[in-house]
Length: 145
Image (cartoon, rainbow, N blue to C red; front, side, top):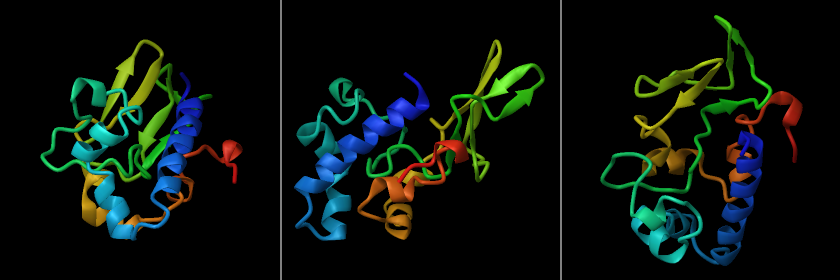
């Protein structure tokens, strides 16, 4: 699955949940996206829920910003780096991020970074429309409303 296809599918799942929570306060919405609650009530939101596995090794994981606003992707590649295509990177160059480098490709590995899953970060960037928060993630030629 391409990054863009995943992004669009995830945006739909997120919007569906948000429609159910339209009468909740922002704090209640954020609390709803707690990993423990989500794996019970929204088991199809993430394939890791079925395995009772977190994508990041942290005690209190919030899934509201599944996919980070600092992540950048381009399914066509951003540029060539030493004969490899850079497909994704971290816009803040998080010290906890890494690169997954293979034969011909480079992808951002966010597994060690906890930035977007902390409540303070989510509250600072909160918007009920996930795509609004995530608008800078999309490559410029793919930006859609």
